[in-house]
Picture 1 (cartoon, rainbow, N blue to C red):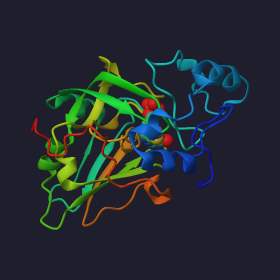
Picture 2 (cartoon, rainbow, N blue to C red):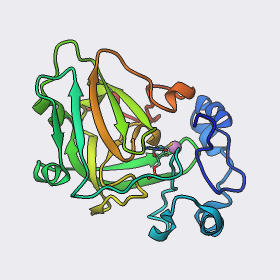
Picture 3 (cartoon, helix red, strand yellow):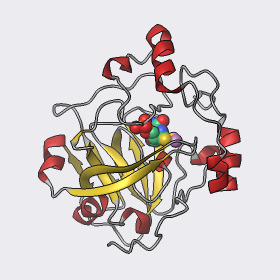
Length: 240
Ligand SMILES: Nc1nc2c(c(=O)[nH]1)N[C@H]1C(S)=C(S)[C@@H](COP(=O)(O)O)O[C@H]1N2
Ligand SMILES: [Mo]
């Protein structure tokens, strides 16, 4: 699992190690990142032959996003079988269904999606439940200081400090560009962490666990910064 390439069916993927160098180099490094020459169209061509995910039915390219998954196949979840569990250091652990999440107050955040691989999608409208609201409902205990996110792909994980998780621009997102988030984009529910690199925005979200300390996520265990702030991020959440 650890050695699986993040991008599948691509001609000349930029290695994660190389990307870390670019990430360390900051904005200039991102500008200098090799262009994704093969792109979505070639992904389609190759994928139709050998993509094991069966996801190619949901094309075309949704608005500039690239498809990422660290596993080959992810189960589909819907109103009937989706569940989001909030637990760990909380007073009121709870499992939400999709209709329950939809019934909560929805917040719209217009923000960027910036992948460390050098592509970005700016000013996309995301909608969903503020993570802060779910945490308040669960009642974070005094010892709780961080969040660990898990996913129903069975492999990916992410983390935030409690302070980051309480920001007004961190969503348990149900919609992107005014439509329910599609399966390929991590739906029906994914995290959207507007002020951080897109790897923080875990797709196929299924678990929110309040922990005492930050538990580094999948890419963070492999060298990515735990604090994934974008260069232009307002780290104080002035909007809150
Ligand atoms: N479950 C899961 N979430 C994930 C990833 C992943 O591989 N699995 N990749 C991350 C990375 S590196 C990026 S850039 C975005 C890509 O989201 P997209 O596939 O909707 O473009 O998802 C992030 N969240
Ligand atoms: Mo990414």
